[in-house]
Length: 287
Image 1 (tube, rainbow, N blue to C red):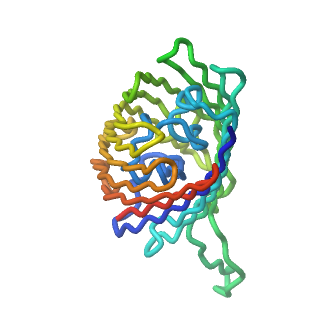
Image 2: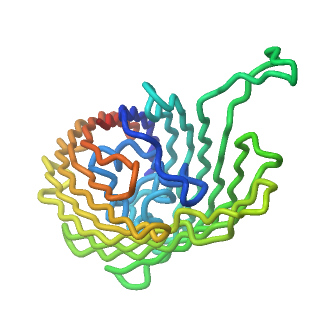
């Protein structure tokens, strides 16, 4: 079975951007509206096109042979006015092997440029991107693991653009309605913009658990919880989400995510989704 997903997200937050202890903060922005609608509990999100950004190991459990998605989001539109565009998907090879891939492009707020005489000469839009590919394999009926490799590019208007390589690791256990997952993300080289200082990526680890009541042929109700750590400043994140699905036609979700990092916002998440003949649309709003 093939599946196509469109995803839209809107983040309305008035808090300041995350402290500059590291670079590549756009990697922390998940472009999957469904995941964000349940407070970003990505480590235990079930198989979807966006597995490459969540827990890559989930795609090995999918009953679909192929799934593809695209998303568009506005990040802090009232202050940062940033945008994110992404496309992702996976393909199954046999019953146990899955190939995940995705690309996301993050555009920061544009600013004016002037010459040495102070005369306006144009504008510049800082941008960053990540291109990722990974493999997931189910070793036994209830356990799978995945590794994802990414190439990152960052052009923030510094003397030169920066690039880096990163890896994500994922493990997932599925038994009936129970899912447990672990991810280690953004493990890689540093970004250097042409100066004396190099900046580490926002490496983190997350552990979560989820349970879904009901079956795909009827109404389903899911709960998920996740806790993690950002290693750059030892800050803690934790989230919990609720999701209701009426077959594959209607989805409603809500959650709350707590973050102790200085300047990083905690948020309430709301979401909805609609499905029709293998095509679904998901929307998330964070406040």
